[in-house]
Image (cartoon, rainbow, N blue to C red; front, side, top):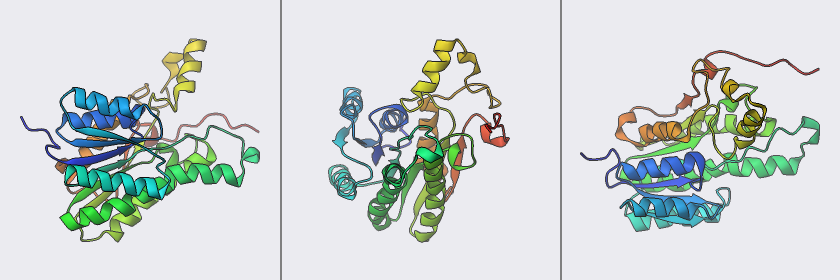
Length: 262
């Protein structure tokens, strides 16, 4: 039975771990060739796992917020695969929960460069290749933190709100080209980014409370976000464009909040 991405060329940033790795493996399992990008050396483990399973992949180390790195990545993927069908601009950093008075401009700029400029660069440099082909899917990782307060620090939340708006505006900039731009807004997913939350809960013996604010009463797994990315990369979502797909166990269907600090 053919895979949903058979013969297609794809790029996944942040593929060294977590959601990015799960998505790269899922794309490959569905028949795609995958360019695995990350600033960590662990990205080669992802590419090797794909090749070991009989798939086609290469790893590329770089910074998602550096334009030269993104250009080199996109150019190599298009050249090596002979086409570029889907790009998952997933790389991101959390920035922690620093109090507002401890945040400075340099901290904001570093975080925005990866979380918001990075997806913009992916769209900027992937879309001309896709436009020439008359089709393509670009997916950006946003967050429920970008929808309302309570799910992340100030700079992180603002950056992810920017990603939601970015996909809306660029989907319209690419009007009539056949190129779709969408976002995924994950809720609480167990990854390296959220590892401290899970570790502290387990140390306190309160792991059963993880995800208690959403109707499914649990946290999510990277593969559950990979499934959403596969949907948006495939023809199953051919009429989905300029959309922010929320995958959060139902958290954002309500407005759960904790007690406010004075």
